Length: 358
Image 1: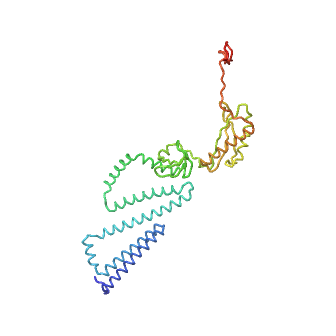
Image 2: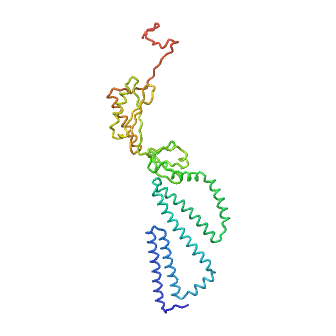
Image 3: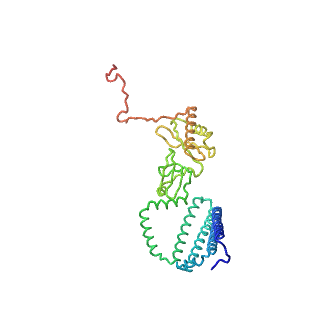
């Protein structure tokens, strides 16, 4: 086959350079369009268009230099059959369909989660990644089957490898499963003030394997998710407000009704305390040396700093109010009594029994 028009060597070089420039510009433009587009279907169209331009440019160069016969001979020598090319084309088309399908799945999942306020963006991303991996694994099995590859040995080997990995990494797998459960049950979120077992602090990160807390001493604690899932979790931030308890004792001879009113009035106007719900003062218990009252106030936007600040303000205000009202907060004291059959206690006085002071 010969070129239908006669071109000199310089003209062919110029034409080849122009074709290479067009192909390079097309690839560059395709990459820019790829990054700007978010729809996977458009990604596929861009890829097909760029591939078509590259292929057309290559064929043009081959014809331009009159080497098509040599190229065909090389293809025949390499025993490239049409059936293999068809399989390659079908495989590429199937991969493109799977790629577009993951984009459709992502859009459908976003529309579904947008209608459910209980599902966070993080949980949506985890769900998509799980579905995406499942879809890719299924597509890989289909492609291998399409190329008539025996999957029995691969599946048996994967089964044994899965058993070995499962035994070796059972704790890690347990943490991963517990992490998925935590992400969907949502007992806490990043920024919450929580207590997990004997650890408490602010949640700074939640991964598929562990949860990280920043304690109020500035320490970072990494808790495996299986430990978090099996421990008692107290979330002090979830409701948006928190009740603070302060215990105070008054003397048994004190008018408790009056003491309760004084304590309630003392904490009602504090800046760190909410007016609604209103502060409460209730009798808690009979102590060893005092009647114990429980002063209950509420704070909003719970944090350790706000909690301790409100508690300090309540203690200071109640102490000042009791001092002004003459209400005694007793020290621990004991009453000692002797048994009647032993004559009780006798106070030994100097000079008794013939003793004299020196």
